[in-house]
Image (tube, rainbow, N blue to C red):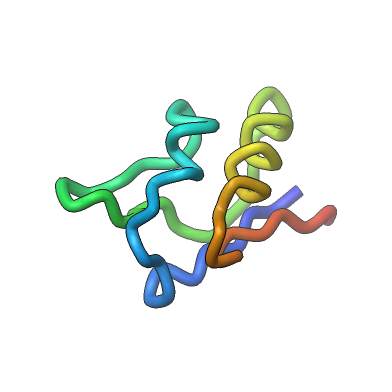
Length: 64
């Protein structure tokens, strides 16, 4: 599984981190700094929760 993050489109709602702060990291202003990449097996559910919470849909999770 991989997470795709379009950091440039983030509006700073911070919903991804609110649902999954152990996976998604934010900067001091609340914008996502997590980068796209492989999701560890133990974090798959948390990555999905955070992606689903994003109102701008800048985070997506893809099965590999």
